[in-house]
Image (tube, rainbow, N blue to C red; front, side, top):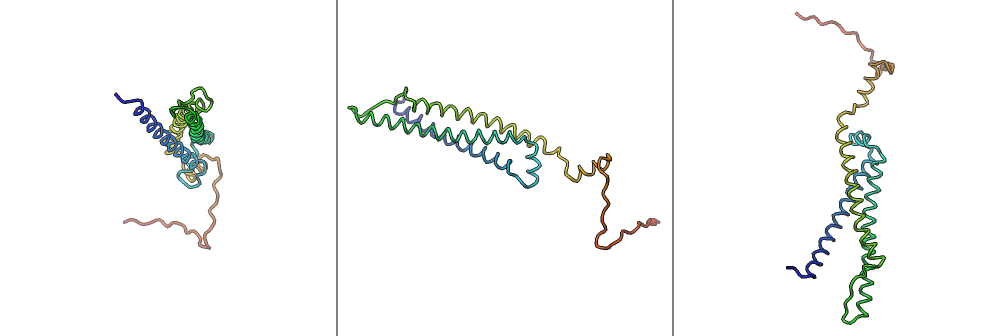
Length: 178
């Protein structure tokens, strides 16, 4: 059976790894939303047009909030550790427990939980974005195809083709096939 020290060490290691993964995922989601919001080149521009822009903004906002709550968790954790260290220096033996009733301790726990809720919301939004991107991308006609369709239906009058550098079109001569 592991000792309390080993259990706490494992909790610290796992918590640090989870926080690193959380930041990585949030930064990746932020990068995806930024890329889709600022895209200028085809075919990604056309694909991004299938995604409602406020959805991309919410993805970006959730990602930034995940990173912000992660930072706030560490700031509160530093305050909790400073408080425990100050109390330990005054005590004999030099030990102290974290003050679970303190605002910093409760805020640290709050931030830890909120960042996972926000990350889950961001992941759902990202799934919606991917579905919109990849299920509609094949249904988008090219601008030339849209124009041809409009001319066929009579929605837009065909435009005359200007002559190119003085070359006159020649009439087609029927070919004689033996």
